[in-house]
Length: 459
Image (cartoon, rainbow, N blue to C red; front, side):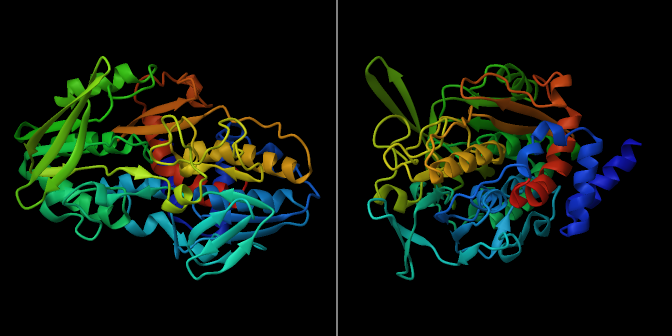
């Protein structure tokens, strides 16, 4: 029974057709999962509100919003601006780097993901004028709006790690899975490293980042891969984090720390990557610590044989330049969009709503967070269009499925207060520990949920 279920899930996870979508949804219903992800009101809600909506960004948040609004508005007038040819399921990059997904399994043609009736402008945004409610694209097209949905994702700042660029990714065995090609290079290099041995260094970064668990996942998967190759004793593995702790959700942190200690992976705190000498295979760090009111910065270097690093990330430059980001507080340095954390409405411009990775809210930047933000943002936007006070509130739910080995995942679900926020059916399990069922969710279910559900506005 178990093997047959896995075969069905694997088959459906690789399909990209309408039949696959319907079969997948029926399977979720039979497993009792659909009720847990709240799609009941997706088809019941409707509004005759009118207004020109412009959506900047066609990733998870932008396409999901476009699909929701198309379903919920009787006469939608929606323009989506995005330059991409492909729609990537970015959480799948980790599994490409682990050898569990083939590269072609994690993307679709963007044109096939745009909801019917939505006007697609295949271009990049370079400026927003929130006073005159106008967007400027790289082709110098001026697009006016009544309401703006700001979902451009985030910007990976490769240039802030000296010696690294996107074009040279992989040289000197320095890798990063936050890029599609980079994930493919990581798998080949990680497998070779697991077989031959040496020193592996894994790092996160000092900014907020997309899927904060990803650097931890590739570290633990590398460790397990070395055991699968019967070569663990020939590897030294070290994890460097810019944070003051390995993970910041108390319910899950103890077990994650135990796993690192059990597998002899060192945890080094307060460490920022400043540069990489790929020719010498050397990482340049700064240890940044507070001592009272004083900040002590201590530079040091480490040699490596295999490196997985995480570059700093921020809102796209046009967000900062257009005055839409936070100007004070913890979210100001990277100019994340200044929205109310519950309603997701901009604090200075009430006809702008923002969600997804670019939103300046104090929770993790994950597709699971997007899935919960979309219905809140869509209903609040419609309330604004109707001239009503927005009532929906986002509680900060995010989920980070930290892959701890080939076959287990520590499924971290939490809210703004860092309290566990466990969804059914995982509420029936001890999610403070890694679970096989969460591996099945990660490997087989979440990708079809993304393509068949989220992007279609029904999950």
